[in-house]
Image (cartoon, rainbow, N blue to C red; front, side):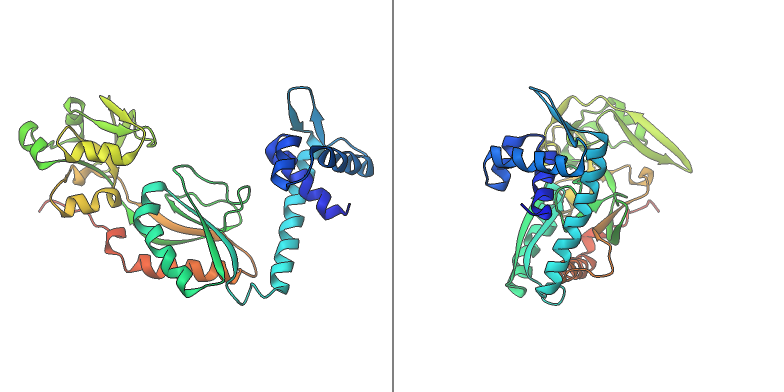
Length: 306
């Protein structure tokens, strides 16, 4: 068994934390995985994986070797792609990630047009409300909201979003429009458990930061559910401006307390920095940035009172 294959086996075992799961991932048998790890440890002369009957974890030497394996295999893959011409012709599998709702509204509609333009590329899109480790999960391009750049990555800002408080006009007519964030303590609030804004909301009062504790009466698992509750007049919610842009434009929701909003969050397209960028990555980044730059909804400006 060659060393590169051994490295691939070791990487699979380390990431899956299981010989059996690694075998399934590699489409081979568990005994062959066990033999590969044993041969690797014997040749190197040190233990890479500590095993018990119930668990498996990396030793200190194994952790260092894992990092080296990832780097070496990435360089090997890069060399093969270069030889195959992938640095000049967009081709192969492209893995992208974005937050769920942003991905559904802004990224997914562009994927078909990109694929039609570059027929040798296939796309795997991970729309998840968590920060994906691009290296560990093999992600080529990430669309991220906020300052979420990892070391060794390049980020291009393509817009910004505000953190807005909103409710239906009917709810505000019945309960009044808050003039100061502290009045939110008396409001019926729905929020999402996917948000970090469950126990306190941040504002700016003049030049001073202001934190307002909130006690949401209803916590749901998705932003869309909280937004729909606000749309039908049940209460108020706080989300990112792009998530309610259509409802605000249609008059279904109204933004309040915009004079107290904190600084907007950047929308960034993130990819691995390097001397050479695969054509599939570069063309997709260019495609996204071009379209996002033309979308006014991604560069909103709060309407300040006269």
